[in-house]
Length: 147
Image (cartoon, rainbow, N blue to C red; front, side, top):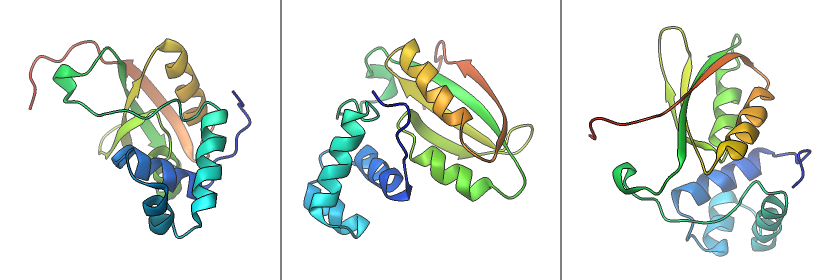
């Protein structure tokens, strides 16, 4: 796995599309991204080879989801960097949902990962995002009521 992988806006958009529908065809992804099919295939292989994309899966309701580690990350954004930070976070595979909030934190990210090692890698990548001034992460231990 390469820790030096550069992820650009096209990679982030590709990851967003795959998160929404991992079964989307390469042709559909290419059309939505405005790039050639070969570009999509090459980028998917590069993201897979780097260990950023570790598989394609089915999303289940949270109450029937297999054992995953979930965490909440409060994020403070510097100055007017919100759009850039949001774009970067939406391209991060470990971020399952991102919420704009008020109060102490500007953003609240729901993280979902397979294990603690993956959580550590996600936190490391998020901490490198330009424009994040502070963050705090809490592990999700139990849900008492489902919506």
